[in-house]
Length: 459
Ligand SMILES: [Zn+2]
Image 1 (spheres, rainbow, N blue to C red):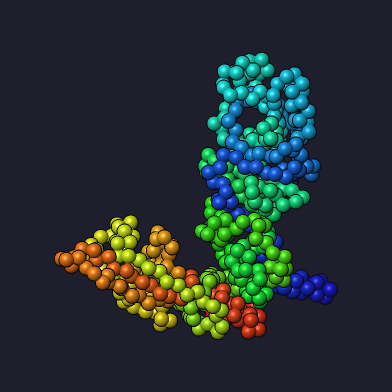
Image 2: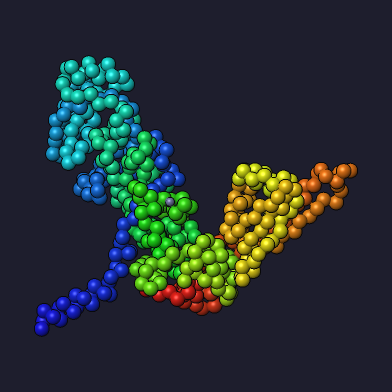
């Protein structure tokens, strides 16, 4: 009987904590905004712990200056002797230094060794090799080196070894600071790439305030935190060597730069909460402001989604009001960039509305045909214009023909096409300005989420 009760308690514990892992789940963020094509990286911490596969040295490595991680461009002679600890390799290295040779400790898989010399050309390396015996290491072998200032400190023999750094403080990488671990590697390129490994909640500390100002009502911020968490969990493994990148492709992430104590606390308060439909994580898309009513997914993208349905805003705060003006010659240029030729542009006509009054189809009319744009294509068509994509699809169009025409009425027909609209973003899922308004009315974060995502569970 006692065993049975223990079994029941264990089951209960498991059920209550089945999503416990979310808060502590590790996430790999590719720092593409700073790296991907970098030759070197600077770590300004004076003291770091070095590791592989999240197993770290229990002693710190200390730099006199900064740690610089760089691609190896020198020739060395490998002594081919293996050591079981960094300290033993270091004392062997120091013996070579005493003998007058530049030398560096080398990290291998499960061992340490020493590289002697540090030459700009092969001949000098060959000369040393004939004296001490070993094998010549050439720079094109994609090795990473850690420098202390300009003195080489540790070299990594195998390019599949991705060194990781952690610190007792934030890691100061180039001009940004990061929580957790920083990993360097070549992955599939010849350039250095850095990956930040941290818990999902720590990642949210960085992303949520980039999505919503920390000064907004707490229940709106909590709704945003839960939406961001759910969104991130459905985007894991979006890249080959990391889960997400730090660009708009995934979510903008600047490390600890945008963090706010208030938002961190709210993320912690909602730490294991996500949004589900039929017990599956939802695609928790969100946007800035709808201009009065949100949109069905199928009117924006291709497929209909049960929980992404149009909702009338209850208290949307100051939806963005916007005006964009284009000369017909500018539209002709944009069409040309998309390899479309319909002659001179005469104007734009709205062909179809979605039930929400959002424009669903427009035609750009030319002297030699027309180009029809549908759904989100209507916004993205303008991506390469000065102001970027159209703010929203809640707009009217006015075609203004110039007052004076040329004598033959055929030239200089550069009319002005004016779009006047409201709202900002794709309009599917949670509206951030709408969530702000609902929070001000007294709605709790889970009610806000259940309003914008139809038929979901927040748990
Ligand atoms: Zn990405």
